[in-house]
Length: 137
Image (cartoon, rainbow, N blue to C red):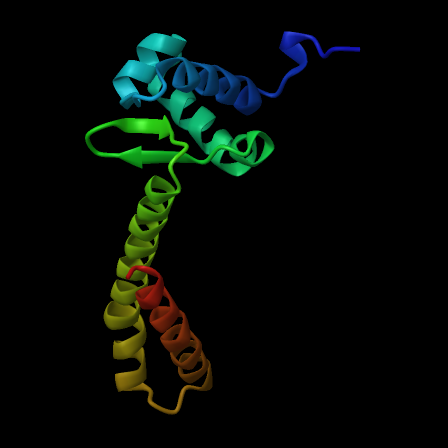
């Protein structure tokens, strides 16, 4: 028995609307404003729909959702696009991690070099940082 529209969780509903708009726009992408117009959702609803697509929808439909500055959000069938997007995301994570290490953890260790937790965190994050640096290449 098919589910009724009102029974769908909101994030899933928003994700479905965003997915349909992006499929209709293929091979082009849509900027957030264009998605708002195409789906008649608010910006926060579009963002929630995109998060749902990233969390669930893309895996269900086996189509990665990517974002590029010039094209906006899009479904691409080109693995090179997926890889470039993934590298971009790893660069962002690497930047945040580096700032956390240099702005918080390093000063913590400078003040309390024998702090066991800070030493453990530093050792673990050094490995993560190296891995992320390799993934961005």
